[in-house]
Amino acid sequence: MTASATEKVDRHPAREKSPSTLASELVALVVAYVRQETVDPIKALGRFVLFGIAGAILIAVGGTILTIATVRAIQAEAGTHLRGSLTWVPYVGGILFSGGAAVWAATRIRKGPR
Image (tube, helix red, strand yellow):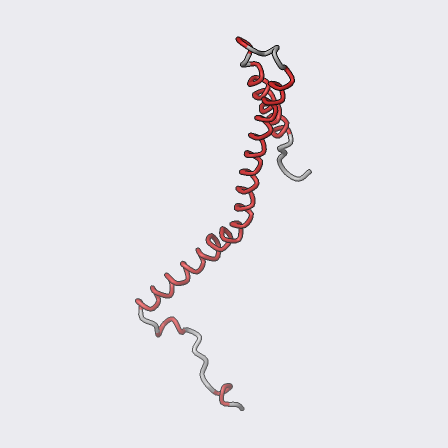
């Protein structure tokens, strides 16, 4: 027989530990569990959140530029027809363009897999 086979195996190591040691081990175990189940997944999702925020900012800037381009195109093409009391018409066109784009984007939102 080997030396390890003849040694008595202690099946209850917790009985030899003091209550303060057990409490500190419990706290360490709970902290490790919380970190594993909450903090680590949130850190893993951070990259996707970052790309989502960057994409949202780029879409907002692009939408704003397209709306201003729509207003300027209406102003340029209308020439002298939208002068005086009708200067607000190109801005309504920009609002309609933005509203149409928002409605189009909202209709593309779906729940679940396609």
